[in-house]
Image (cartoon, rainbow, N blue to C red; front, side, top):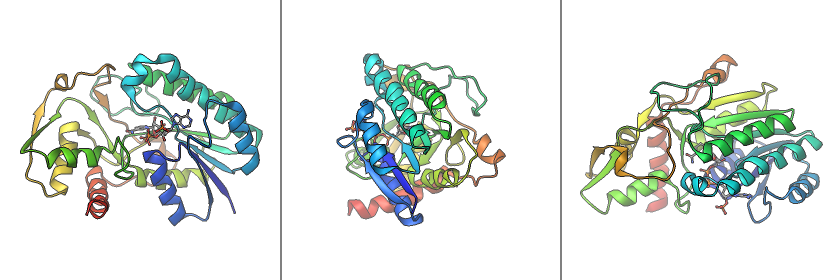
Length: 288
Ligand SMILES: NC(=O)c1ccc[n+]([C@@H]2O[C@H](COP(=O)([O-])OP(=O)(O)OC[C@H]3O[C@@H](n4cnc5c(N)ncnc54)[C@H](OP(=O)(O)O)[C@@H]3O)[C@@H](O)[C@H]2O)c1
């Protein structure tokens, strides 16, 4: 039986990866959460990889708070950059395949879909740290995929950054809420992303992949869809992103084109609207 090790196993994406692979694969899943595996310790990583000898590793662990990274640059590089190097070096020693989860936030403000050949812009320290992770995995591990997903949603209500659940909680508190109409991306369901990752792992088609649900949306479109799916009457007002002052200069456009998935014959993901409908149905059961 093939073994799959998932880093950052308590995180939002990792939770849905585990749920997906447990139902759709025969793999033996090793959930490596932060308390069992701090990726900044080369010794811990080496020991765990040698103990389990996974065939596949999906590396999700990262500092994901973009504003925190802006203020804590060394820590961001240490975890997202050099922690990823530890994963790559130790994976190479056991000849494992690695999927490194990078980011869609590597580009600029120009409103257009970015494919894998577009030069990066790296406006934030978070983006620089994730891109350092890409360079480190590419240098250290010969059997690697670098996946840049869209704006992720999914996981459980215990996940602090659960965007869909947080908007629900906000909506039930009042008659009106606001959302930015000038930030764009591709809302992407972690469970659908898991399916695409499973297809990659079965192949030797290594490289960089942009992966998102189909279509793109502003934050306003995204929030409006969530509220509609919950059947709530709360009015969503479109505002400028300056209403949400942030430390990190996040790009206006995080829309990605799934060019390499298409080129290499992989299935594309369904629309983001359908993905939200699927996920809200699951969340409704969890909330009730
Ligand atoms: N969320 C998005 O919209 C999005 C979009 C594109 C790409 N991504 C990428 O997708 C991946 C998963 O993101 P997510 O949204 O699932 O984030 P998440 O819920 O914050 O999960 C990240 C996990 O990594 C763990 N972690 C942090 N530092 C660690 C360390 N030194 N060693 C081991 N584990 C550590 C965290 O533990 P603690 O909670 O204890 O810190 C957390 O459990 C990340 O690589 C992120 O950069 C996210």
